[in-house]
Amino acid sequence: MPELPEVEVVRRGLAEHVVGRTIAEITLSGARVARRHLAGPADLIDRVQGCRVVAADRRGKYLWLVLDQSGDEAHALVMHLGMSGQLLVQDPQTTAPRHQHALVTFDDGASLLRFVDQRTFGGLALTDLVPDPAPGDLSAHRYGIPEPITHIAPDPFESVFDRAAVIARMRSRTSAVKRVLLDQSVVSGIGNIYADEALWRAGVHGSRSCDAMTGPALGRILDHARDVMSDALSQGGTSFDALYVNVNGASGYFDRSLDVYGQTGRPCSRCATPIARERFMNRSSHFCPVCQRKR
DNA sequence: CCCGGATCCTGCTGGC
DNA sequence: TGCCAGCAGGATCCGG
Image 1: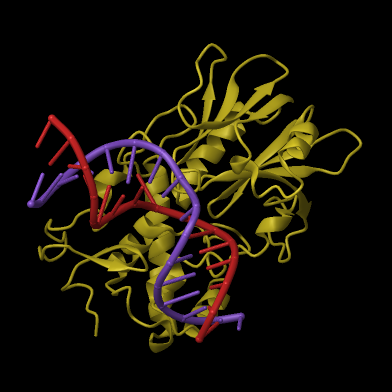
Image 2: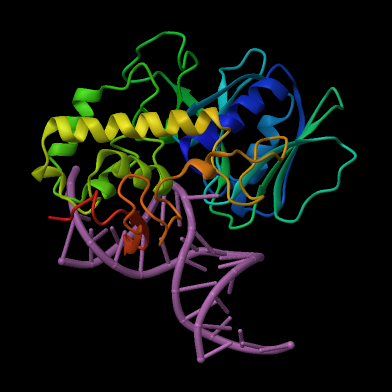
């Protein structure tokens, strides 16, 4: 379940159901799910065993469990859901679903954690935690940031998010504004749905070049991105089908509130012009041809 | 460094 | 009915 609101829904589920428990064992089906763990799957399996889950943390679309093994430095089990990943907390009596790639059991013998991923773009890795290069609120990311994701920029909900710096960085880019919104090293958490929704709310066409836009205009887009993701989170996220669910397998409801994404041909809720869809960056972009002029 | 495009996968849908 | 092109919420890697 890809974008920030959906990942945050999952993080909350892990905080409720997994934090505080001690891992008995992790089982991987095949090597692909741990391909980002450079020391290999056997190393991950060995080192996760017996660790206590201290926290469930997130930056953008990346999620990690802070693991503590007595007498050792804390590590992070980093998880990315890719396009189709799910984390499910289920009763031990349940059977493994199709496309399960990892299974975590706990020493209390209660619920277990399944990593399920149809398209296998997601994955797991056990990594070191490094201090946040730009620490803000000490309560946020107090255990640090996983080393492999230090290139991921803060998301708009973090206290370290520097709105002015992000705007300045965007203005220096010659790419289309939608491409830059999707660049996780500039601002993280925004994906194809919320980029389209934010651009519609701002009345800007995604193909407009960043360097041709004013700072305030870029700021409005960023604010809309934060707001639309906040709205989505309050509805439990966006899901069109059973692929995008929380740890209990339940869907969110924000699909009913989308203004442009997946609304091709439907009337724009501001001006009634049919919503258009175009290919852009090997994916679909949805926009109102009247509210969002290309120039 | 930034830019644009190709690539990794599986499954579903819609048009012929 | 069957087949196949096109599409799906993402990140990374590569040549330019």
